[in-house]
Image 1 (cartoon, helix red, strand yellow):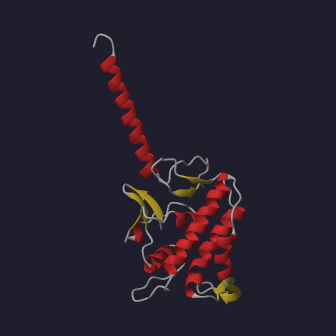
Image 2 (tube, one colour):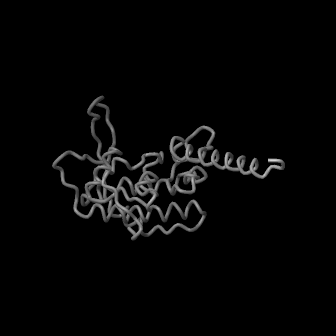
Image 3 (cartoon, one colour):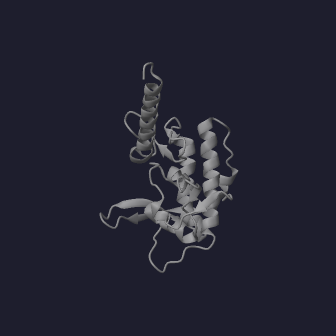
Length: 208
């Protein structure tokens, strides 16, 4: 985390607008009025964020693995660099992300679904707790880099926003992380520009 990055203690405020796990990972950092805000400030913050994606449990009294925050930030940095390069059409450096994938050791397991009793195939992690928790996020990022349509992987068009999203709309014309937030900010800015231009035109009009 650089010196201009601030920390937020409320990870529940981190936006889930990316429509893809890897992009929501990048969106744990947002741009605020005083700089970039990092919603991951503690190991527990990372667990709570993972729990929002059904990748962990955040029961009271359950301790997060030591070092999870540092490892999570390293993964986020690697994913950001890879996705930014892929979007720009530049070569993707895969070493850092591969380190996280290599640490995520799993094996397939056949089991019965608890609700239906049907046979399902799942995977069990056989690695340290931090790698186990972050592994699905690393794998989601790798899958996006390989299989994703990067014409639909976009950053919000508002100049003050750094959030990413996967455009899954039918028209594929999504421009904003959220129409309710940045879309309305853009509309308000355009309105102020138009009304300001109109006032200026009236002020300099002949005979006025």
